[in-house]
Length: 147
Image 1 (cartoon, rainbow, N blue to C red):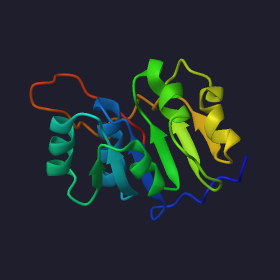
Image 2: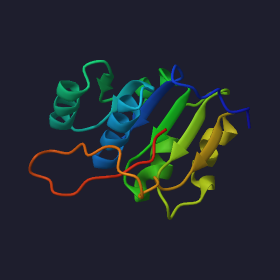
Image 3: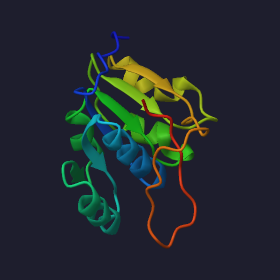
Image 4: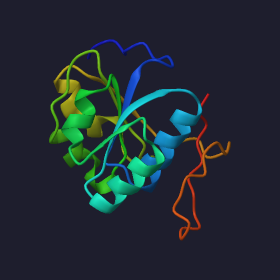
C-alpha cells in the first residue's frame, strides 16, 4: 500500500457512482472549499442534474475517467456494488480510495490496495449538518462532517 496523498483543499477529489450520497458528499466538499474535480453517474438524467448544480466539476458517465482525475476517490455506489465498482477500475499508487458504507469492511477495496492505492472507508458522520443537497421532490438528505 502506498502512502496516503496529502489531503488539503487543493487535492483533486472524485466521487464515483454518485447517487444521493455521492452527490451530497460532492456538494459538501465543494461548499467547504475542497477541490472536487469529477463526479461519475451512470444515469444521464442525474448527470445533467449534477452538471447544472456543479458547473466547476467534470460530470461523466465513466467511473474510470473520474478516478483518473483524482488523488482521492470516494466510491459511493450502493453497498452491494462497492466491491464490483472497485474491481472494475484501474488504480494507482499515491491514490486513496475510500468507501462510505458503514457495514462493509475496508477490505472490500482490496483490489485498489493490490494496485498500490491506499484504502479506507466508513459511513459519513451524521451528527453535523453541512450539506442538504437534494432534488426538490426528495424529502431525505445526507449529513456530513466536512472541515
